[in-house]
View 1 (tube, each protein chain N blue to C red):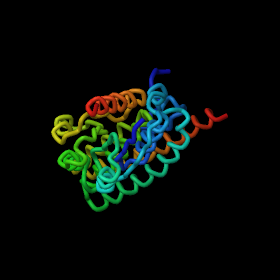
View 2: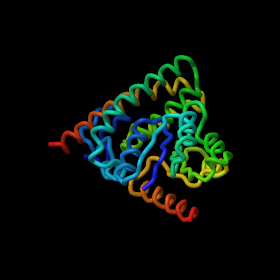
View 3: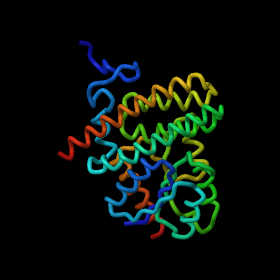
View 4: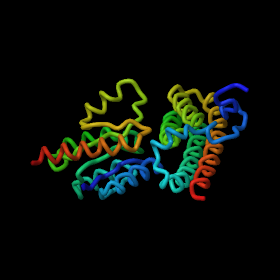
Length: 131
Length: 127
C-alpha cells in the first residue's frame, strides 16, 4: 500500500476515512469541538446555497458572481481543514477570475462530491464526539 | 470585556467568530453586509470591528474607509478578516485604514490573541 491520501476524492474515488478528507489536527486548532456539530449544520446549508449560486453564475456566464461565491465557499470549507474540497474551491475561484467556464463546470461537479464527502465525515466525527 | 461587531457574510465563519468572542466574555453584534454593519457601528460605537473584505454590495475595504473617514467612528479599531488570496492584499487592507488583519482560515487561539491585543491597545490609547 502506498502512503498518503491514496483514495482522494479529487481523483474521483471515494475515500474511506476521516483523515482522507480532513486534516484533523488542523481542524482542532480552527474549530472548538463543542461548536463543531452546530457549525457543520450551518455549513451544510451554506455550502448547498453557494453551490446553487455558483451553478447559476456558470449558467449566466457571470464570472464575477462565480468567483465571488467560490471565494466565499472556499472560506467556509477551509475552516474545516478540508484536504480536497478547500483546494478545489480555490481552483474554482481562479477559474471564475479567468472566465474559464468549461473548467468551472468540471470543478463544480468535483467540488460537489468532495463537499458531500466532507460533510459526511464531519458528521461522523461529531457523532463520535457526542457518544 | 468589550462589544465587538462582526461584519461577515459567511455564516460558518461568522458563527465561529461569534462563539469564540462570546466564550471570551465579549458582547457580540453581527451583520452579514457592510451597509447594515456601518449603521450598527454608528449606532453602538463598538470597541472593535472585525471586517470581512469580500462582502455582497459594498466591500470591507470601502466600509473601512467610510468608518475611518467619519469623526464619530474613526477611533474604532478595525481588524480585517481575509484570505490574503491576491498579491497586494495586505497593502490594500492597510491603505483602507484597517488597523490589523487576521488571515483566514483562522486558528482560534491566534484569533483571540489578536483581538485581545488590539482591544488592549485601544484601551491604552484612550487612557
